Length: 420
Ligand code: HAM
Image (cartoon, rainbow, N blue to C red):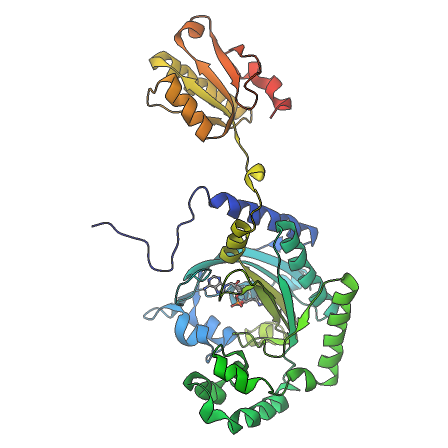
């Protein structure tokens, strides 16, 4: 019986993986422009890290984590908690009081798989730890906006503020009073949420609940002076940069660590999975995880599967950004193949990308392979030329170009540097 991949776990095959590379390379270039440094953290952590950071009553912690129950260890469902754990454990804030970090990798959530939603998915995760400036919130949002524009993807930005431990309790009470007036009409999930995490009721996807909550009080009207001022500066900053946004009082996010600014980049092109990037401030989280008291932080993560789907749907031709093979060597006969393998070694040491195969195929079959590999040149080592210590170079991009005889050594190919 064939063994298949797990449900919600997907292979990224050649043909698609090139898009991932383009995404990753574009992202790395933008991260560099914004002066971010890479950090790599493990995929397995103590379960308590996520319980504490994300919150016990969130869907992620309650229902979606892959936990080795006997070991109290969990495959990370997101990057922020692990990244902060590492920053604290390694004392990075002592070396540099503001850390600008990114990490790229797989995350694991046991959700119901559908288009754009997997159980192993990948995030580009960007975090700044150690600054509370609202200008930083604007800067981070601008980073995402630049990356989307470099990739040619259309998204819209939604913004909210979740206040802070000073102003949120009063809002929570006001919201709860509003919820309680219509509690028996809400879905059973929301009835439960109203007791554990009432803000999440705002986030419910059930249309009847949305209608019932349409006139719920907005947290934006309940912000304390400092949070209100912070939120204003963020919005003015975005206006100054010419980045359009829409305020959304219903955006509360599915993780408990947020305060003040939260934001999401949305698309209408992926059905139900609208969020392609999301994040916000988490000023209390470093302290909650045992780091220095009062250390602020902000970050966001981009869902790579969703971005790749949008790249595919955008109709752009990314072929041009894929590096073709420089030279395919077609060695004919036993001797020809041996010479091909020696020459390939020389050429690769000199920096060329080289393809060849060892199956003793006919010249016609090898030319087909060279085409499929998108080779720029083919070098044929056949019996006649071999006797003279030479082979024949063909230009696959320009069929009218003259064939050339070249000696079987790498130096003879150096003139190609200008053509490749
Ligand atoms: P999140 O909203 O849970 O936030 O996830 C961020 C993004 O990851 C989503 O907008 C979506 O694009 C992608 N994503 C989430 N779940 C899946 C899934 N099952 N399949 C495919 N893509 C998915 C966080 O994870 C926070 N750690 C973001 C953050 C960083 N906040 C501050 N810093």
